[in-house]
Image 1: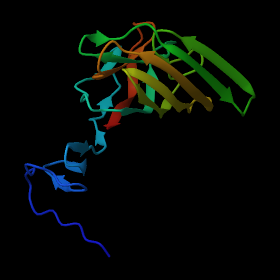
Image 2: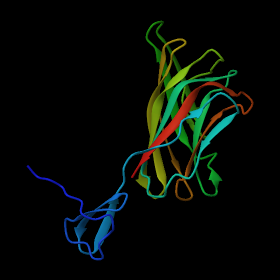
Image 3: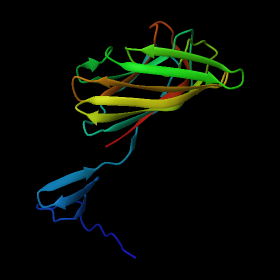
Image 4: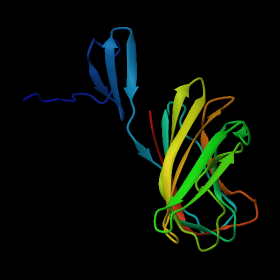
Amino acid sequence: MSILALTSDTLIGTPATGNIEYNGQFFGTDSNASRAQLQRIVQGTAVASTSGTSINFTSIPSWVKRVTCILSFVQVSGSSTILMQLGTSGGVVTSGYTNTAGSINTVNNTTRGATSTSGILTYGGGSASSYVFSGSIVFVTLGSNIWIASGTTNNSFNNDSTTTAGRVSLGGTLDRVRFFTTNGTDTFTAGSINIMYEG
């Protein structure tokens, strides 16, 4: 059995091939010339989605390659659908998305569908104040600031299941995610939202 022993909390000056170092985070090295940080999964602070027309998560580190958005029993005050947008230090990107969301209800055999160029939809049709959304949508980078979205949500009011997918090309490094009601006037009334990110 192998045992990993961390003998120092400071980085060595010249890493050796295959060396593992520790300094609050782990670093792995595959040659004397390179040192790569092995990032852990970081969970944000959950925000109660009980007021306002938007919820923002900012200060996402530049090394992030994957962001998971999590919704738990989220409701809005009217007919607005919840939309997600990514952004950079220059602000949230509000156009240029390619997104399709499709919802199906296997109980009454109905389907709904919607597309968006202004963000990533969490539901495939119109909403209502009685609808309750839970699920997760994952954004992963293709490189060159291109982000691909995919995920599923559930509307527990009428048992709809939604699949959403899309992409967006940012003009810079991702550092924020925004959730908002599509008509800009409906407010969040219940539930909570959080994100997790990793390198």
